[in-house]
Image 1 (spheres, rainbow, N blue to C red):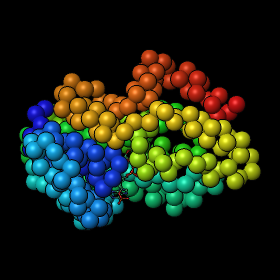
Image 2 (image 1 turned 90 degrees about the vertical axis):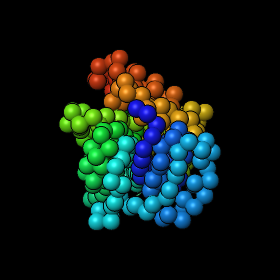
Image 3 (image 1 turned 180 degrees about the vertical axis):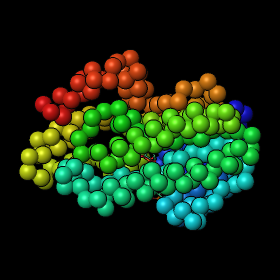
Length: 271
Ligand SMILES: NC(=O)c1ccc[n+]([C@@H]2O[C@H](COP(=O)([O-])OP(=O)(O)OC[C@H]3O[C@@H](n4cnc5c(N)ncnc54)[C@H](OP(=O)(O)O)[C@@H]3O)[C@@H](O)[C@H]2O)c1
């Protein structure tokens, strides 16, 4: 697709969303960078340097369904807003944690997309891009709420890929690996499961493995560059990685059968 028209990014206050908003504006889109607190984006228009597109900041909390507005015509939607929560064992995870996770990562994304699809249609088609996670390819313990919320979005994207193709809307799923953001920094700690009887060993092993990603962390600018490339590439596959670690995982997953891929990873957590 050509880099022109309006693009809306959710969760653009910081992290991947912020970098994607700037990158899409630099490529030529008129970007609506949305966020819960618009004051977080006051310096954002000045970060656009290429002069090709533009960037405006708009308030949007994806969980505040009644307040969601999208431009009348939209060429690109990037569903990036996401949250991560503490990681107790499954048996000790309260329903409130599941609900909070799904309110943002799943129901918020659904409502934004529902409203954006008519705008994408009005523009004659475009790209609906969901940011999930490469972690859904691996049997990561203590991450069931986060991973399952992202897997739900992945399945939604598969259906939408078929449903929206006749309308000229291409669906894209970005599956990041470790990207240098607050969310990643916040995950640099043992999961809360370490405090629970019977789960300490697995939690320690998980954290040991987590520390192994140091040196494999990708900058938000590089991730945003890869995401913008995939948005503009009409021949891109449904699932795209935006960093070397996730590229390797996605390639391994594609080349292996599901069970062999899982079996290869299980010893990391089961010893
Ligand atoms: N970083 C990684 O390594 C990594 C890996 C895999 C997947 N991801 C995914 O990539 C996406 C971006 O993550 P990130 O690493 O950039 O995280 P981040 O730095 O924590 O940023 C998260 C963004 O989502 C926004 N957000 C949270 N709840 C929201 C809501 N209810 N409405 C609107 N915006 C909301 C945050 O806004 P506030 O500033 O208002 O909190 C922030 O802008 C997420 O979907 C995440 O799951 C990240």
